[in-house]
Structure formats: structure tokens, C-alpha cells
Image 1 (cartoon, rainbow, N blue to C red):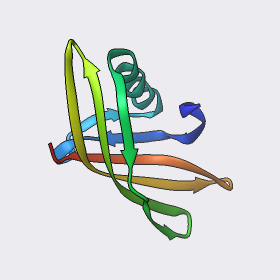
Image 2 (image 1 turned 60 degrees about the vertical axis):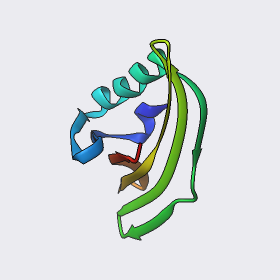
Image 3 (image 1 turned 30 degrees about the vertical axis):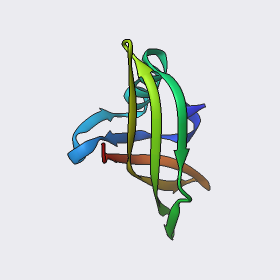
Length: 102
């Protein structure tokens, strides 16, 4: 599924814009790694604010998550910005940046 929506040059950045993953396969593996290591207890987002500019779009929203990992439980919240590009009439996620508040 992610392979169908991630751009071939997808980039994921974390807090302080630290590079987390670069390229579609590395970005997919970052999701797979989290999903296999964590048990998500709850996850919620706000309504996104979306801006569209021809063949590019951005979406910004707040998120909060509770999850268990390595015998500990975590509660985190923050902001996320996604950038999308349209190629051959299809939208792809090209860039993701996430900042945490806690």
C-alpha cells in the first residue's frame, strides 16, 4: 500500500528536521520498523489544513499517539507536514516532517 502512494524520492524528517529516511523503500521500512516494534494504543489527528499549488500540495495537522514499546508506554503529540506531488495525474507523498511537543 505505501509503495503505491510514496514518491520514489520520498523523504521523512523528524524533530528539528533530522533525516529519518530517504527514498521510497527506506521510508516504507521506517513505517514497518515502527509497526513491528510498537503496539499503538491510540492515535488521533486534527483536521488537516491543505494548500494546493498546481501539481504540489501540503497538508499540516496536529497528532497525538499512545503506544507501548520495549516494556514502556509513551504518550506523544506534535505537528506534521506532508508534501504531495502530482505526476501523470496521480498524487504521491513526497516529503514528511514531524515535530514532537512531548
